[in-house]
Length: 224
Image (tube, rainbow, N blue to C red):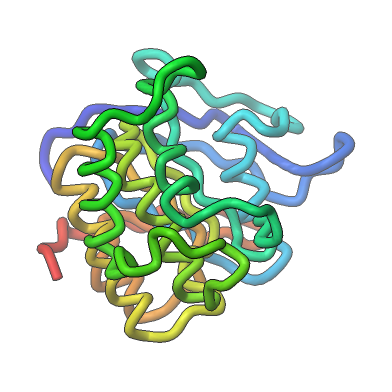
């Protein structure tokens, strides 16, 4: 891929819970602007690694370092960990992507409402903006979460199994958005099942199993 700028350096990093590792030692670098797919069998620590890099849980061993300081992170959790019964509208959830700009004492400005609408339109649920989130299907709920991440424009985006439980059409739409995020300079770390989509669109894979971690650099992929 040519010259790249390191964003995160991992040195003999192991992750897990209560001091017990669930991954082998991981050493390597994650480049700024890459699309990294973290793949492997169930229970090998893929989601745990993502949560560790996000700062939700501490490493069990080793370390990781940010080359230029920890950036703002856009986070998309697994669908089943998200509360869908909370009485809030779709557009209110998406508006959370603007939290650095919003004030408790100021209403959303017209320009911000326009950006929220544009994000909803990108994921094709603008017509659901005023619906309560408990009325959404699984695919619609995931599109809403992607609209929030898109609106945030964080330098680093972490996505934990974003295609689980959604139909192929929704997966294609979300994959297109992820490619566009990378093209505008964002770095994406994504936990995935290893499918042809991984080899087609992601620039690098980190394959985990219980004995070893293997980095697989790939050529830069084009847009969908």
